[in-house]
Length: 351
Ligand SMILES: [Fe+2]
Image: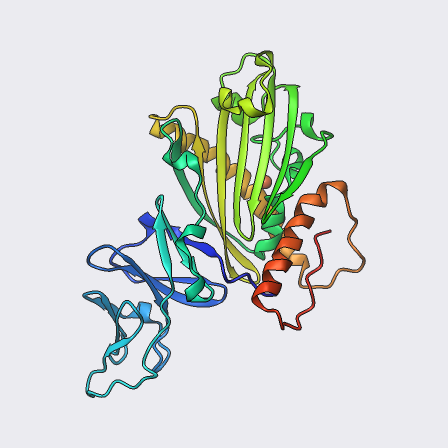
């Protein structure tokens, strides 16, 4: 199954990279990432074109990488700058250099055609630059699943009642219908649960005395960035859709990076509008997110395990699948744009 290549993917948090050679695998490609002496991030193919030793097994010499086998040395642009024992540098002596962009504490990598790597396409949102919001970075969660079922999950508020009963969901939302809308290359699924007891997360952090109105807006920017706007406000406040800032409001961000057809890394973080100066609060919230995302991981890995065998029957289609169906259509459009002559059979839309 192909991946959308002409898109920015998260290589890692900025804090993950320094003057060490850090190996990564994205879309089955081995990549080594490091920083120059001036601090700029560099990503090269993690394989010497001589004997295929991973370059990450070598060492940095200034801003260049020296292979740990025979000392072939490659600069930040991937071109060979030295071959010990010979002065001639053959034209085949190079490794691929990947376009990178660093912003908001996140290092992004472009896996497709380098000339299309436009930094203006890197995901951003106003809350990052707004003093009324505090960002808090989370983990890099490895999930043994293709990234699309995970992306489906992030267009799917309905699962929350069943998968996350102690943190983000409750039985009060089981039968509340979901709105769904495609906007260009994003899918927005949402619902409000009015006048119900707060779920575990908002019991812990909302300080609510009575019932709350709770919302979920899941925005999936295809192919791989999800923003979950969720929060709660006291029911007696009677807030409208556009007044969510009056409640306790969070954006949970998920950046999905395909490692292979059966493995994905989910870099997740949040932005919140309460306790802006309370570093400990971000960490306490992350503890709840860790419980919830481990629950998603268990579900997705159990489903992926079934993928080894073809299904015995067609999947049942439900009304709650509209979001994932929009997403799969967008992904297919993006793949078709990249590979107009591809003979690959189109992916089935989600269940
Ligand atoms: Fe979930």
